[in-house]
Structures are given as C-alpha cells and as structure tokens.
Length: 128
Image 1 (cartoon, rainbow, N blue to C red):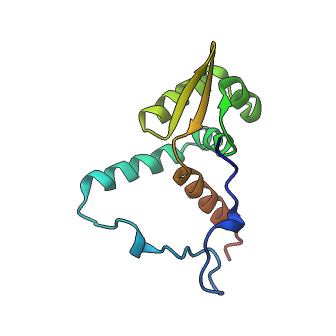
Image 2: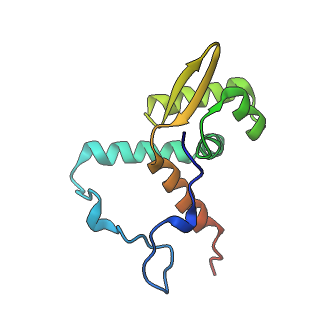
Image 3: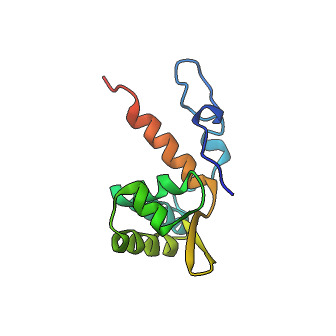
C-alpha cells in the first residue's frame, strides 16, 4: 500500500533554495537526444496538465482507491473518472486490481507522486 508523499522528507540542498533536490540532474537521465524518454516525459506532463487527472492522481498519491472513492473525493462524475483512469492506465501511471466487482486503482510508482508534490509546492510558493 502506498503512503502519502511527505514533502518534508524529500531531499533538500542549498539554504537559499530549499526545494532543490539533492539528486539534481546528475542522477537522472538527461540525454536530450533520447527521443523515447523525452516523448514519454512529455506524455506525463500532458497527463498532469488536466486538472481532473491531476485531482485523480492526487487522490491516488494517498493510497489505492476505488472509482467510487475517487468520485467522492474529487466530486467528478463517475464516467469522467473512468475515462481519465483509462487514459492514465494507458500511460502506465496507474494500475488496477480487482477485488470482487470493485476496481481498486493505485499509482504505478511513487515517482508520479513526487512530481505532483514538487509541482504543487512550487505553485504554492509566493512568486513575486
């Protein structure tokens, strides 16, 4: 079971830039000519660019949830949630487990949760 990402547990560096990760770009693939990775990354950002999908992923960042649980927490319609979950499954961002007749959705891994938490922390900062 996944847990809520703890923004305070994320690695930090630089006192003047507390949200800069210690991993920086030296620890992640950054080959600008790696078309496959660049394209998959662009697809991830497209998925996150829709408020409804972002809300669904935020719910799932707290742990596995049923479709009805997502509907309750987001106030989105069930058909809309199902449509977005189908797309998110196709992008390999979420997975589904069947428990009887109920479908339980979860994030495939914590990377997506970290991207969301970092982006929301950035958005919440005062930008003067």
